[in-house]
Image (cartoon, rainbow, N blue to C red):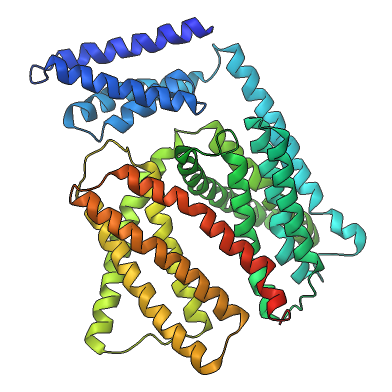
Length: 457
């Protein structure tokens, strides 16, 4: 299929759309023109992000389904045919796309194989999975994420400067993870194991947006990529668990113990390779799986909102403060991270042109509830630090809560303005995408500075 053929096919799709809307007597000609302009702008934006024209039209139509009843009905009737066409014919008629798809698969296989091989290299130097718990807990992300970043860079084809910058950051992470004199039982070991993967994931984000580093939309695409990548990784993990269960069963049937092979080869090699495969799946099916985003957020946002409001009401009713210990602190940090994830994921899946609705009010309630809880946790933490002194854990937790507090506070303000029709959705999106470097700065600060500041204890 040539470029001209692709444009002709796209125009044919627009012709079908125009014919459909003109059959509706309640729709004025000017309204139809405005809707078509919006649809074309959405298609152009998706095509510029790498989607094929037919895929872009499908996604744009589905997104317009949230604007009004007319668009929703058209999306339901028309996009089902396009969906089947995309899923069952694929790239069969387009040799250019088919060739690129094959190159992507080959690049993915090379990177996945590289990740699987790299995690076995330390065994050549005596680092086995049986006696290297600290080493692998700290370095696990370093065996997987550089290969995923390499795959994304191969697809984006940025300049040598971007390659060099990302390589420098990965090398820096490897140096601090292995050069710092960290004891297995120290708090610094826990901080390194939990914060370094996040810091490196944000380096993967640089690889993802390397084709347009200043674009807020590309950063939002990376947020959506993160959620979809996680969904694919979990699904593959579940499938891998079933495979391992079958391996145990069939080998035990012949009195062969597969523990060594599974524990030392299948699990570690499969996990790091799956991180690359999941990234490839999101890239290969971008826009198709994105329907997961609104489904997940619309299910869990109400549930988390009710849970947080019930928690705050209970605190007010009992008059008891929050008892902060290490486990509780981790729980609250995870809770706030989940709330932020729900907010980011819903924003990434939302049509910027869609009108305000009840779900936006629900998100505002969720963010305000999380903001109040975060403030209560910070108040309690400050009291405990004043009484018992600082440790690496409570300093890291205090900083993370402050970073989240700042984000949630301004997010609540922007959401309030948006719900009251005094602000725009674009302002919320710009704030969240512009805040990503703040997370990167803090996580790298924890990895690089906190262990030596506390003498690696």
